Structure formats: structure tokens, C-alpha cells
Length: 285
Image (cartoon, rainbow, N blue to C red; front, side, top):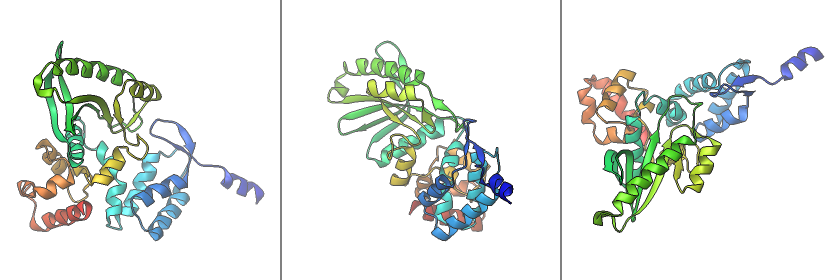
């Protein structure tokens, strides 16, 4: 009896996206469900199921996928929010839809934005992923998109961005059009920054935005705050239909809700079209 109890008391080791093993923490899962807005009763049902099912070596991705499937059955906004991180990963394989998505987040904050712009530097031309301007400050942003949740942006990226921004600013300060502007460089990623990249970025005066950095003001926080959800969070459209929309630069739920004519181009039947509209109404509320 004691031996059996001892075996059960051993922590279950699960595998993170980085490949690192760590003890399963039900509190983290509970918090993610709470942040998604799930009801207390629903959270408890999911936690009970996961704790009875989880096993050594299972990936955190599988755990959260199982939890999402259960949450999805509730057919609420909670399920859509819970899927958010995976939905961003589904915007690939190119980084262009992500760049457009970041541009829309900045627009919601009151910035005038340009995406994928070729600009002159003092020495050479550069392509900036996003240029965002507001209140006399122009941000020159490099977007680093990855479909690998375990990937960290290395220090080479902010080093590279700092040099590019400096070259652009040197040129723009010569032009009367930009004489009243201050300039900031930045890096935006849907994953995370390495410790070195954060340390250098801070010292170099770069704006760094990652999935959960800065704390409380990371990408996931901005998405929730400004209600700019990626198109890929929708459950009523197929992957093919989402890709067709993203190829036409439709990358967010808000954008699709404001331009419903894009749904007509997909050739959806009336029943499915209404289902998509209901889901858009719910998540954009």
C-alpha cells in the first residue's frame, strides 16, 4: 500500500517546447484557463481530466491541445482565446501575415503604420517590416516570426537591427520631411528573446516585444487588450480557407468582420457563412 502511494506521489515529468523536462504543474494550466475566461466548473472538469491522463514524457503541446479540445466543446470565447498562441503559429510559414498582424495591433494603438517598406539608409537601402508613427515618434520594427515555440531570438538579431536602424536614421535626419521626428528601433517576435538579446536590447535603446515580454505588456497582452485576434483562431473556417484569406492580406478577425465581402469570395454556403459571422461577433465583441 505504502509503495503504491509512493509511486503515485512521484511528479510526472513533461516535455517543454524547448525539449527540457519539467514536473507537470497543474497551476499553470489552471491559470491559462482562467486567463481565457473559462468558467470555474469548466476549469475543474478539464483539470481533473488532464491530471488523470497526463504521463511521463508527454509534451506540454499535447497537454494544452487536449485541454483546448475540451474547452472547445463549451463553444465560448474562452476556447478561442485559449488557442491564441497556437493560432499565431498557424500564420506561417512565411512571416508576412505576422508582419501585417503586428501592423494592425499598432494601428489599434493609434499609430500610422506601413508594412514591408523599402527605405533608404545612409549607406544602403533596407526593408523594414513595420514602421509605426505616433506623437512625433517613429518606430522602425523588425519582426521575427517562428513556428517553433521553443525558439529564442538570439542577440545577433538586435545587434543587426540596431545597425540597420542607425543607418536609416542617419539618412532621415538629413531630410526635412522627418525633421520633427524622433526615432526608435525595435524587434517584435511571437516567441521569446534570449537573456543576451534582452540585455543588449535594453542597453541599445531598442523596443523589444515578445509573446510574454515585457511582463504584462507582451504580445499576448496587447492582443487581448486591443482585441486584434489572428484569423487563424477561428474554428469555423478550414486551414485552406484561412490561407486563401491571408494570401489576400486578411489576417485578423476584426479585419474580416469589417470586410465580410471576403467571405463571399470563399464560396461558403449560407449556413457556414452565418456560423463564421457568429464566431466573429463573439470574438470581436
